Length: 389
Ligand code: PHB
Image: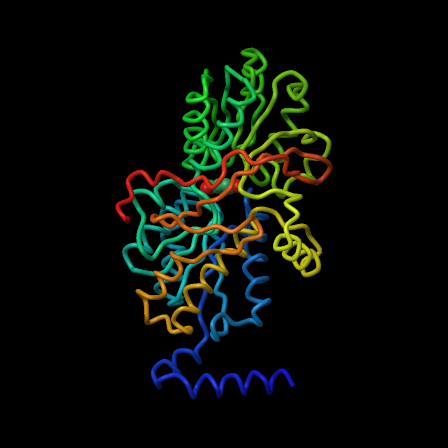
């Protein structure tokens, strides 16, 4: 029955489209998934892919009539391999669109290749400010955030809480440094002062010496950016060092997203800020979470939402051209103008292609990052250095 219905739909489609478009709409749409399958961000890559595939499955395996074929590359969150890896998708596999990645350094190399080759790129995580700043381009959009955004929103909350002296701690690479910069901008605007920035190379997790320094300096608050496996270890080490009871820890929500089972009691009560949270309790989010849990036997996290919304963004572009990707201008323009009905709440893209979205305050309770309020409503990245208007 289903097969017959699909065949009938294909016939109807064929009757209404010119010949060239028919040939294209019959071909599969190749989606290149460039994500980490190994290393500290491996579980983030899995969640993004799960989310993307869930949306495609909800549409019956097709977007705007085009069957989706996936080609995958494990980028290992390794910037030194990034250009070769993305070129495999573009030059060897001739993908129609690239979806990736998690790591800001890898994603910047991807954005450069996308700019040079004109390949459509949807970034489902990496926050590198440059991607929607100096490297912005009509064929590059995000379904995630810029590093500045969660940093800035967390800085607003830390200042509101009345903290005056902060220390920051992160990995020394684009995401860590830019998140800390965003935090510092808002925190100091709100009357605080960042007294010391601590960091270690990505993806190292030898935190002991840095924790000793925090204990010695006793700031009012510590702001941290870590994610994935590194975030699990950091939160546990912070607790084991006795700091959880003496120096409040605040973070962009990646510190506790998708990590709570592994962090256990060490994460309880932590305050973080992010563009997604548990307990949003909207019909849209509840439907998404139920389907995700049934499909994968896992609770979704922010990465799953960003993957799901990457697929929604692609679908919005494809629908405007009935699956005919040769109508490039119309496809790109529809993607950039889309209003995305995200589980996080509806959002649109800025002129630079970055989500304009709410940032929620969350508190860890049990295995949930419970929403307790909104830190900043509809926060837009300043898009410094982007000349798309
Ligand atoms: C990044 O490298 O941009 C990055 C990685 C993991 C996150 C957030 C940002 O959770």
